[in-house]
Length: 215
Image (cartoon, rainbow, N blue to C red; front, side, top):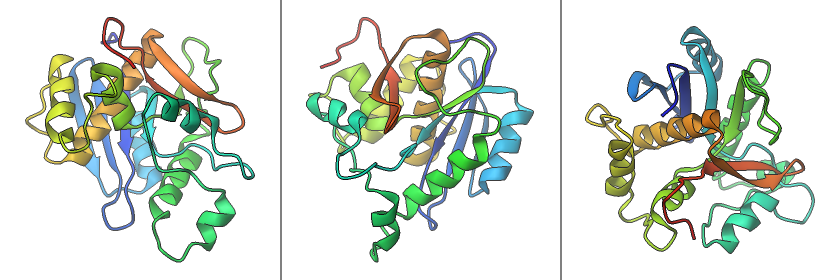
């Protein structure tokens, strides 16, 4: 884990479920809240002196017909995610499915003036926000053949416990996932990450998980 710097993770949900924010300082959960406006979450992160924020939502929409490079690279490693559409296609959808992606967009927009989006060229000491997602994080630690959506409640808590984070206060999988995103922010501060993607479609960041199986 990093030194005393605070880091944050945000699990993005639809309008009904809402977003969940967890802030870590070392291995201690110092803040855990949900159902707050993006501007309020930003204010809380600034109050705690957060250095990096991991967000479980696409950081950019797909450009044109080609899929995002980050999603393609992870798929080649058998790590699959929801395919991000163009903003126009998401806006035209009548299903309501993409509501969580628009909520993620609002989070990135609120944070951007203080936490610029990760572009794989971050300088030491600069605040940053970045895209990650819990299944890829789990796969980084356990391997894509072992990481299982059916066992996510157990596997993801075990990863946090192995990192020294007490999980008894985490009441839902959403809070667990937000904490995983914060844990990844700690890895980013240490420079122990793998970034998939490009500047056009944005990067997805996962822990390098040195010494662990990553397929």
